[in-house]
Image 1 (cartoon, helix red, strand yellow):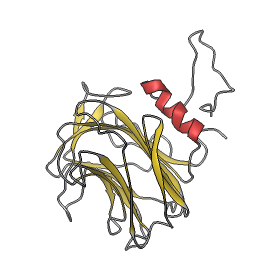
Image 2 (cartoon, one colour):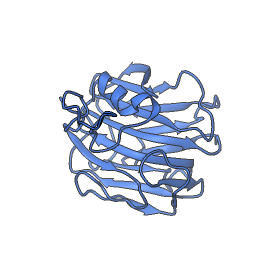
Image 3 (spheres, rainbow, N blue to C red):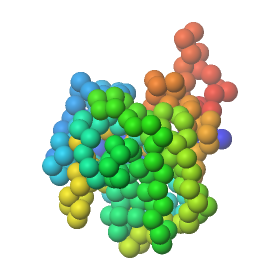
Length: 228
């Protein structure tokens, strides 16, 4: 299976909200284009902690029973209870920064009860990290820089509404805004494999859409799992 299989959307965040894969463009409010602090491509988006959002909008594919969300993140200030992302369907799927006062990223899912997985070692501000969350109706798993931070048993995501909309930066209902940069967001309708997480992290170099690996000698390696 190739990394691109079952990819719903991919936002490069190179100065706009365009979906490079499927035309499901994001809505950007307040967040500013940052051409200096970027991980891949030409830019990232910077969030100043005061209502900046990058809204992925309502998805045409239901990911409440299985999916993957992956992105690069660079925190600016470690803020208590900051929402890196949250869904608008009752806040049942989100990533916190410093939710429990320990300075850690926390991946959270609601399946009728709150289920959480925290990063193993606290992240540092002004440093890029690759975060991946995979889930199905059995387990939630959280990855940082290609390393699993842990799993927890869970059922399907249980939002308050039928639509499932993910917003990066926070939402006005909670006003728990994120401060820092985000780059290269990918959303899949399946749990990607461990090897695919490693390929996307790519030893810290990253692997952007369309996930084609070109070795130093200049020939595309069609055996690589990142090849379309």
